[in-house]
Image (tube, rainbow, N blue to C red; front, side, top):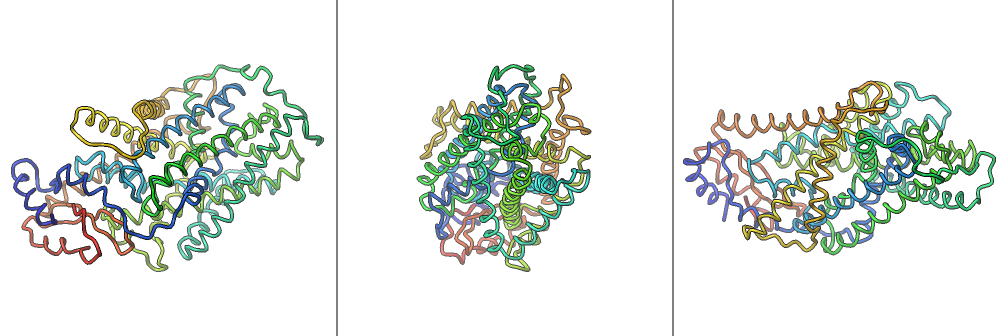
Length: 551
């Protein structure tokens, strides 16, 4: 069935049921058939590459920079380790949900594909809100700030209001330029820097076990006794628990990274079934060992006051002051690698939204000029990151960025898990078929939904006992900004998908086309209400080798 056939069928129903600006061209069955079209590009990613695709994205600065905050919010060593375990379980349940959705819809794109599949109505609403979510959040800003702080620590300089931010801006600017001008050089540098991440966490892990065995004999090290009466301390509050969990889950952001590249993976279901759990479980075990190592080497008082340079403090107590400076450089390089990886991905997501026609000035954001790279998409993310780095008051920039990424991600996860639960319900009633190769199971999906919902609601609980998220900002600021970002998406949808089509006498429709690169993608068109450009739009994309799955 072609685009014209869809249009004719829908036009009859539209007269009775819908306004022209909100017409939907497809039935549920048509959409379900469309989303299973497989990308026809060359498949180059195997088990090992998919595993490292996730490891390199997850292993950023989180495990090096959040331990002090988690300990302070938890109140004791034992509770802090329990927070790491609980956050790991929540993230693992999320991974299983994404594995089920990815096995059912094995294409590039990740959660955007899943949201559009699960929430087909109102037409284009989820697309507009997702576009706002991607467009306005500075994902690479947090680790850019961490690079600045660790570089200053290595240089023996005090962190001030602007020096760490200045270095952070330089880091994100360099990442933008090298990815925008030469993709291969950017990838080579990111992969080379990524070696430091794995080396550091493994070295910290081994050092921690040596310390517990009494093998460290340096002048700076003395047995900490942190594991004696490990739960002695303050009882954690609801406010402390939720913010500690946010910091833990921040360290796992990226567990769904392979889902963005499923269209490039050889036999995606088999690879996803092996690579995703392998990467996650390996990193989960290493994270626990790293935190045990911190408590084995660094006194509690030092941990509580070390802020985001806990890893540097670890090396100072284990090996001396010179080692602290060297470790600071290595951690900075690790965080820098994550910045390179994140801006590489986000620039391409912005470009893809432009290619689909989901953004204003779509051609501008869709272009690969002038360097045959997503220059404009990368530049957009660079600008947002700089604003995110500069805008918060002194001392709050990193925590604000962390929460501003984690909170909306939990909103998306809650919606995805809720949508999947509804699919389960529809299948139970016999109203739909849903039998993906990988199944998270109902208890796991329900747990992930409730955990994500808790992480949405709990940040509104006021802090007590002197605990606080920020030095100057109100504790609820990241939640309010998040809803503001989604609100912009809602307003954009009303204008883009409702008001402008009525004014311009056209209907927005989506059509699945297969590009020259072999990837299926939705493309949004404006069809004149008199049908004058239907044939032209129907022929767009039909010069490719396959045109199945047209919406």
